[in-house]
Length: 210
Image (cartoon, rainbow, N blue to C red; front, side, top):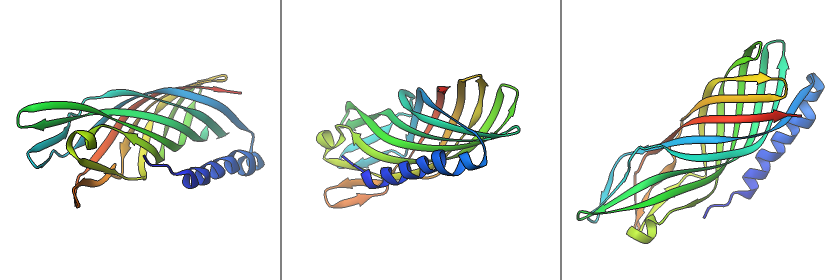
């Protein structure tokens, strides 16, 4: 289990300063809540050691997110930072001498996307970076194989998509890609082997501004 309270606190402090300190000086800002679902795919190279084959099948699995969103708009241009708790899942297949087992990898993380976009009436297009901080991960991979998947505590990605803002209601449809891998490798005994796994996501969010 990975816990990153100091880093999460730093991101939270930056977010609060953006909401309460910087942007209100420039213009009026909208604050709201947000929730939605993910369709997540994790793609990785197959890994074989000690007669066992470890692979992600690349199929999509559903996850969810919830948190707060802010939006500052100047004419048709807007800036939209978000602070979200996210839970994503994907399957890991373990093949040992023809006996296949399945375990689920679950990742709980804090995401901080910062979208920049343009509006035409209620329609908007948006894109921007997203920083992710891993809170904890859970799977039975180590129990079933003795192998330990070493995950990075922080990753960087990007999001792009479109949405609609109608009065206080906000809808977003986005794609998220990875700029860094999820893991540093797989530990087998005292040896660490390179293992590149990357996540991509389709995201649907609904928000309500106050």
